[in-house]
Structure formats: structure tokens, C-alpha cells
Length: 482
Image (cartoon, rainbow, N blue to C red; front, side, top):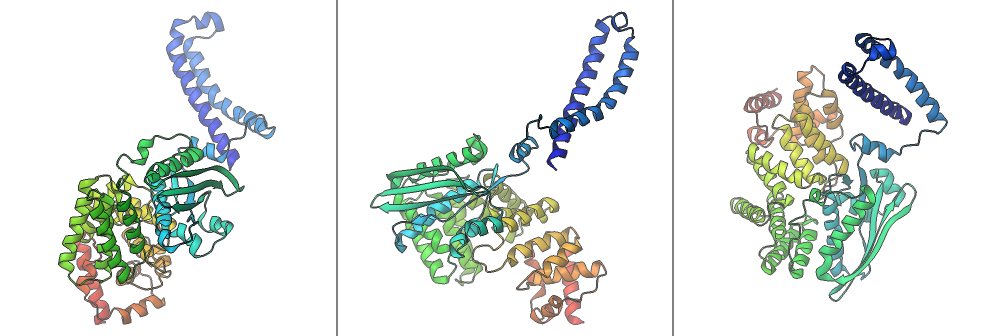
């Protein structure tokens, strides 16, 4: 494969050189006495040039092959090939949980919060690919070995380290390792006051990025307004609120909102505290932790809008706004905020997921599927879930829109807990393609969904196509009547 790539480079260079030679000859020949020097007139010389250059290509390729075999042509690394060919391959890194040297549960949220912030920082760099927070923290929860981790997730590099907090000082040791050969590419130690944590994070991200891909324009990080707060108390409450939010229980959700309110009280300009409070409120809404749904939705929107008002570069706020507008069927606003979130953070699987969901509903099906596949690859089991069903539901919807029956057949059989949308869309695409349904999923769905409110459930598909919505309602009614 590599040799053919080298041949393609030789061919490209030869064709470019030939074109330049023809252009030069066409301009220069009238100014020289070609017939007197070579015994050829200009027209004959050009004809010979057009005949000779194509004949010369296979000769050059043969010579290139011989020189390549003898090692005269220098070898080009895969990384160099990828950079030459437009960077089609991105280095994939994981930031695994740092060791908490204090060994206390109270300080663990700070250690994990700093690691999560590092993951977010790397996810904003378009030139690399970062493993999701959930998958990174699985390294600790599932007690992976590095070799198992590398194999399961296709990791090229890993960032690891340790943190010790002593009163108002923080000590961080961090290193970047290349997994194929086990080499440490970069390492450093920091002994600073807590308030320097953002400067430390900046330096870690900068140094590691340079080690991986060389100097890059820091504008690509969209970091001008990254710091959420200069108030350390507000920052620590923000980290604790995020950690509680990730536990997904009703009690932890309530405590998360309380702690995020403390973060806002300590610094009313902390945009991320408002964004994460909106996320926690959204979790309460989606999981039925609170019954005052109308007031809850108003509270969610107020916090998201406040986050955007304080920092229009907060990708979390734009991601949440995209989800809210999608649920309200305001597809133009959903697309606007989804696109903004993706521009700010192209590697966050939650961003890729919601952006993909919006794209497949706004006539960008192929691009949307690509984003949904990326979310599935980076974060197959989203936070708070025990299976990949949510990723599969979204992908199946995309492939339904593209009428890809084979993909839909494969995905519906991977679902662990059947949902109404996947069941109905699968039935519809099977029947439209005249394929008999012999799988158990259909029979299970008949029993599971026989009492659903069809109109309400299909409205929750967020189809952006009234004709299709009406057709699916009729199809569902026919199924259960039959």
C-alpha cells in the first residue's frame, strides 16, 4: 500500500512537471530560433512533446520502483504521508484519570474535574482526535491494562499523571506516552497555587499538542474566553456539580443543582456554571425527577441563555440550545446552535451526536450520518447509559432517511432495549423494500407498544416532514388494527 502511495506521488509530480513544461514551451518557443538550433519547427516540436511526455511516464515509474527497492528513495512515514495527503488520519489520544495522591474522596472531584477539563481542551483541537470522557474514565472503572485499552479504542497516545493538593497548593505530574513502542514523549511536574490551574492546563495542552503535531495556530482552540472564572471557590463548586451530575441519580441531581447555585453565587459571571446547571435541570426534566415541567423548561432556557450571554463561545451552552430547539421542532435555530457547538468543539461526542441528529432532519443526511458514526465510535456507551442503544437509535434514524435497508437491518438487531421509533422505522423500511420480517424484534414491539399514544410518540421523532409523519401514523395504526 505504501509503495502505491509513493508511485502516486511520483505520478503527480511528473504530471505537474509535464504541464508546466508544455506551458513554458508554448510561451517561450516563439522567442527562440528552434528550427535553426534543433532542426525542428515549433509545431513539430510541440507535437513531439505531447507524444514523448506520456511515453516517459512509465519509464519514470520503473526507475522509481528500482530506486525504491534499492533504498535510494527515502522512506516516508505514515504520519508524513497523512499530512501530505491532507491529514486524513488524526492521532487519537486518551487522557486517563490521574492518580489522587491525597487518597481522599472529598478531593477526588477536583482531580477528576481537572482531567475532564483537559479532555475538553483537547477536544477543541481539530487536528487530533480525543477519546470521550466516559471511555477515558472507563480505564479506571473497568481496570483496563494499557494494552487492552489501546486495542479496544485504537489509541495512539495516552496522557496520564497524578495530583496532590496541599492546602492552597497543587502538585501535578503529567506525561505523554506513545503506546506502540511505549515511549514517554513528554513529561513535566508543576508545583503551583490552586489559582494557577488554568495556566497549568494551558501549558499541558500546548506542550502535548506540539509533541503530537508540531506548532499549530492557537486560534484553532477557540480558547480566548475559555476560563470560566478567576474565583477558585466558584471553580471547585463547578467541578463538584459536574461530578454529581454525572452520577444520574435523583439525589445527586438535586445536590448538583444546589452546588452549581453555590458556584454562581461565588461568581455570577461564571458562564459554565449556568450551562451545567441547565444541563442538570435538563437531566431532571428528561428523567422525571421534577413534575413542574413548564417551570422547569423556563428555568432551563433562562440558564442556557445566561451562559451564552456571558460567553458566546461556550460550546456546552450551544449544544444544549441545539437540543432544546430540536425538541421544539425549531430546526433552523437547532442547526444554527448545533453548527456553532461543532465549530467550537468538533471532537465532543455529545456535540457530534446532536449535530448529526439535526443534520439528518435538515436534508444533510450523509453528513449527519458521518457525525452520528463519529459519536458512536468515540463514545459508544454515553454517560448514564449501560448500552449503546441511544447511539444506535440515532444511527438507525439516519440510515432510514437514506433508505439503507442493510444498515437498518444490522442496527435493529443490535438494540438491547427496543424503542418505538426504531421499531416503527424498521418496520416501515422493511415493508417499503418488500422484505419479510422474521426477526423477534417485531413481535416484541407488537406487545410492548400496543398501548402507546401513536400521535404523541411519532411527534417525538422530530421528523421535520409532515407528510412522512402522517404516513407513519397511518402505518402504525394499521399494524395494531391488524
